Image 1 (cartoon, rainbow, N blue to C red):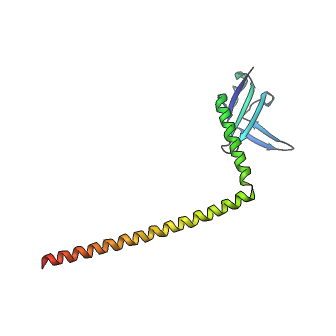
Image 2 (cartoon, one colour; image 1 turned 30 degrees about the horizontal axis):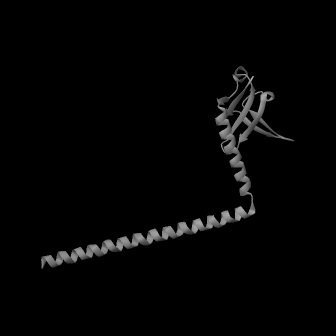
Length: 139
């Protein structure tokens, strides 16, 4: 039996009990050597010790070891990022940045509005100037 790497997107369920149990798309769990659910994309990933015939009635997609490793690395980075966000200092800084972002957006909107008014005033001044020139040429 070789190790087969799988992605599961269908019939993926998490059952909470004394310990968390994952049900992966009809796979026989006794053949699973490593598995996890990536909460950032809602997919399950499985390292399966079995043959392809036992997977025929399952809802899985075979992937390469490289794809499995890349998905696992992304999952770990996502999970560590979630832990970082639980840190009160990080949350406080995030709130500060969100407020600063809101203030900057407001200032940008006010600036755009003032620029629009200035453009309108310039257009009116140009129109008046053109009218004066036209009037002088008539005289």
